[in-house]
Length: 342
Image 1 (cartoon, rainbow, N blue to C red):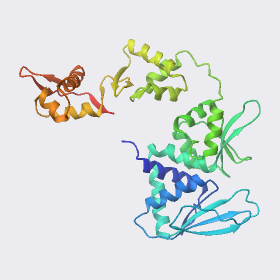
Image 2 (image 1 turned 120 degrees about the vertical axis):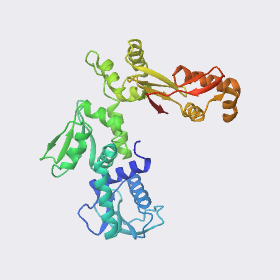
Image 3 (image 1 turned 30 degrees about the vertical axis):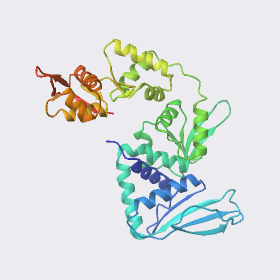
């Protein structure tokens, strides 16, 4: 089981806070940014995370003229200030609570230990401290601003296989190769901040199609199919056309190296012959067949006609998951193969 949507949001906010929060404070949770979409995410996530607690929260709005920016946060008190150097309004979200900052730091430590959440933490961190640089002669660089090199940032980048260097003079982590851009694209690491997202995808899509090494796609796709994937998912991972990926899949299948399963008009491909992929409907049929049943009994249970039920049962028979006896009753067969339900 992968992380839930809310766990992903919490991980993004962990990254945002590590980038733009007051990480040394022992009495409050704060987050500073000039992007309303990020303030929204942090505000809503923190309020959901700590909904069982009572706490005071404020938003400080800084702008060149002290203008009152209307925000739909009914749990917040607002204070407005003048900042002469503010080219656009920026916001500081603040919760004053010794208890909650302790709990928040526990959440951070637990999140950083969970490998499945690393992409979401890095997505939040890049939204806060990252930038997409476009130079002359098609120079494209991903950078993360930091005064000094930090172990936890190194760990985030290394966990995803990113190749980087740190420039002390410019105070930046530098990620410049196409390899890094491909990983950012795969995990949508630049997508949290709307402006950075637009610039990243514009530059990424401007890359000319590379001349891959011989058998690059053949070997790469085979390796990726240790987990079930669709043609579209592979197309995005390898940044190649749907048709090109399909050609390689057909070749691998003809050679008996991969297998495909049709689930709700979608083909899933996998290189493991000990895996069977079925739909939720077929899985429901298997559940019903804990006791042998006639086709008509099964059709009645699912409120479908006899032909529809018989067709579904025959599909399961081809997968060697059910059999029909001399009494015309269908029975579930035992299997050592792993059944994956989509």
